[in-house]
Image 1 (cartoon, one colour):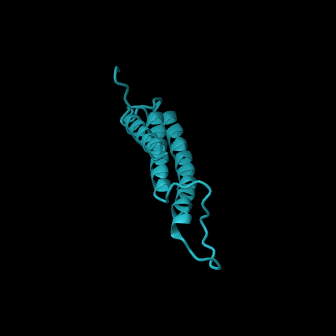
Image 2 (spheres, helix red, strand yellow):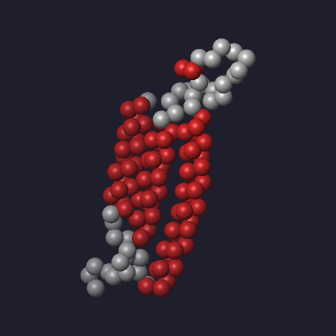
Image 3 (tube, one colour):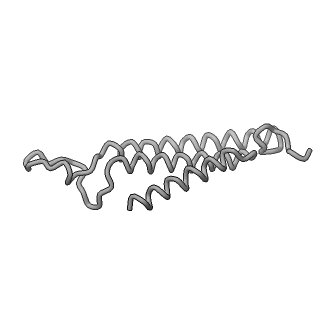
Length: 114
């Protein structure tokens, strides 16, 4: 499972970096989204990959730390997802406004062949 997750994170980050280096604004925004998904999955994987493990410790039972998963990365990722949605919405509004003012979505405002 760790290998599949590592491949997914690598694919998301590589795709995101490739799209960020593209000359179009929309591709840059999608690339930033893919980068944020890759980082979120990386942070989530730091909390130990366990199926069916409880994230909350029961104080009435002897505590075995290997039977639990860390809830901090899950909380961080949930917060990051919300912030990412808001940032993407802001970027899309700025993209649409810039496209309306300049007539193009090229990152420097100029088309390559013109």
